[in-house]
Length: 284
View 1 (tube, rainbow, N blue to C red):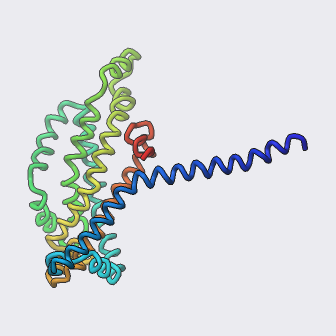
View 2 (tube, helix red, strand yellow):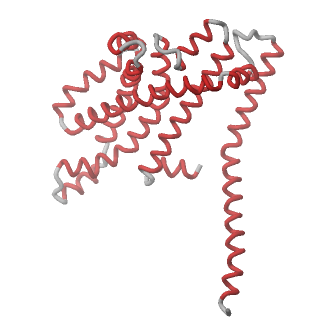
View 3 (cartoon, helix red, strand yellow):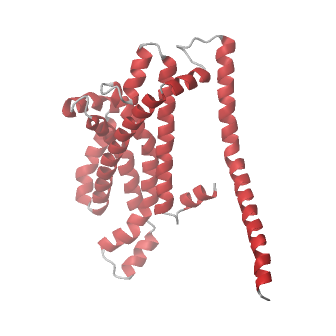
């Protein structure tokens, strides 16, 4: 009984401390995200006022209110086309990303592989991405999502491969010498020094490629495919002068791209919490 009072008194203090931390966290997040939200709302307001005050025609630039109405009216369809395009983007990113990692690991590990594979990678990157879309449609079928995935794979291959290769090769010489002083073989050095050093580079490449993959999927859809995808939806709505619907689809594409990027960021925080990029993201 004598010792129960201090504990009972400590509980309210603990709850107060918890609430204090919660308030500080909320204040910190408001200060961090508040300016961006304020700018976003301000731009929408100015956009709406400018369109109405200047009498800009809908086919040139619909006001945000019209885009919002179109989004609400076609919500189910927009969610469907956004999901289908996201599947193509994710599939292409996985195909291109895995291929890029394999090529980067091989070129970093063996000089012969570097001489054999790097010229092909550079040549593929020099070709405009829109040139691949008709070819992939011919190879895999215009209605086959794989044709769009392959366009995305070609688009994301080079940045992922180059970034990964930089991470595998730009290693601190002191770390390599330390491993060799322990008589570690090249495979152990590769696994324990080069790969961990490359992880931040890999995640940076995947974050950049997350947005590129959605762009590639939409561009590939412009060359034909199912209407249940963002690219064909935008083309069809614009052709019939339903520009508010087309802009609503563009908004969906932006939201999906941001969400895809944030998913990669979340995976990065879990995979490499020791890296400065993850600590900066957590402190923001």
